[in-house]
Image (cartoon, rainbow, N blue to C red; front, top):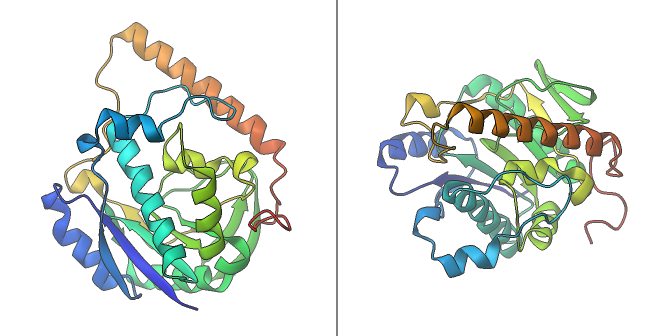
Length: 257
């Protein structure tokens, strides 16, 4: 199985350069640094060509910021590269990750064993809530399929078939990449999760997130935002319960063709 690592690195985030190189050196796979798309440099024409609104339900309640757009486009570039090189799978690691070697190598072996049938495996950085289906365990690392897919895109392994499928579905997008992947009622694929994964998020120890959230808002605006978030999460929970994506992971027959 040919698995290649792509360490996503925003070139202007120079304080992260050494960490990105460390990730590449310690990921136990052949790989490369991949220059992330800088959403702040995109023209209005480029933005309008990729961003939609209300493309599927539940509707994402917030406008995407340029960091989120650049992040999604970066993942799309790597999905396309997995397909172009005819790789069995790609491991995408963002440059604010850290690796705990012993746990990570166990998780990596677990992912390599199951990536072909499961398609998308997150190396999660935090425990998920709700029901999940245990698929396998190795050395204390648990591989499972949660009913409600996890967020975060710190590290994930993506199969060739899944990369091709997600590319087809995301010519235009209306939500962040992790939120899109979570939407298995739309994609037909429930993302699997490994925890512990040997991957942690150290953005706060570097320079903070390069995907900036909303600026500090007045109290009433914050309340409105939290209400919108609550309604969206309820919608996600409902859609997850009724999703037709296979509960055991992977695609239904014919979905990835």
